[in-house]
Image (cartoon, rainbow, N blue to C red; front, side):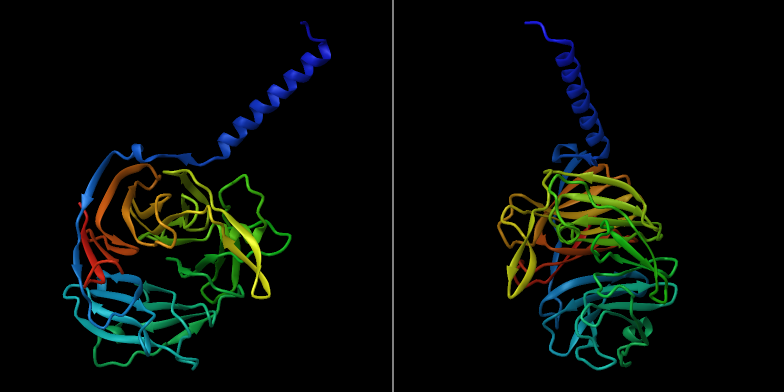
Length: 361
């Protein structure tokens, strides 16, 4: 049956539109990869250790320059942070006093060492402040440790702000009505705003700005040289590498190609954004140094509520898959002494141990 010229023209336009939209979608999509794209797989067995005076570690920071291992312990009665000698693992002291006073913190969510100024930064999201402690006070067993000063970022709510090598700070942006969501907000050293930058992955679900922000909750850390920021997402298997002023350099999606799934619900007399039943836990604890990016991955097969992981993925700086490490002991967070290629990790699932030390190949 022959088609009229009008119908032929209409069908041609439809096909052209499909091709155009398909090509446009592909160019906007991040690079995709699977487990098969890793050049090799290797098993790694760590050394389980038990640290004294550690009740329930939730975050860990390695400071090789000062032979320090710092662990946030939320179940400690009076202080938030335990300091250990990195070589001997001997307990030095507990500090960051709990409380509502001016030299006390209501919580402690992140630690970061400023090598140039020799200060440790501790984030208190409840007080919306960043506290500064002298590293020499922490190392000396005889010295009491109190904040030297504190800083408030002008963003009406902290996530996990990161100190940059130029003295500025970057944090997750707070979504605002009628504004497109951005990933990062940058601040001067005194806490005043600079600019916003970065865009979240494009997905088909039509989420609100607040839902997008919750859907793409993640963790971000800077490289040792301060030139890059690596960001991985909890509930979508995406990894990003940005430069130090928030320009996206590389983004990958994989290895199981799932998206975050959230919804807004009424609860406790208000509105809450929650993960849906079909969501999965993806990445945690991304670290970047030189041409190496390390990150933990869980994926689709994990039972609900699980947060420990056995897969440690190694990429190069352009996020090309290199090595898939299968860890003998499950861990949920780590930091790396890049000088000795030693990974220090927290675990709640290894009997009589709370720290796993892994020598990287």
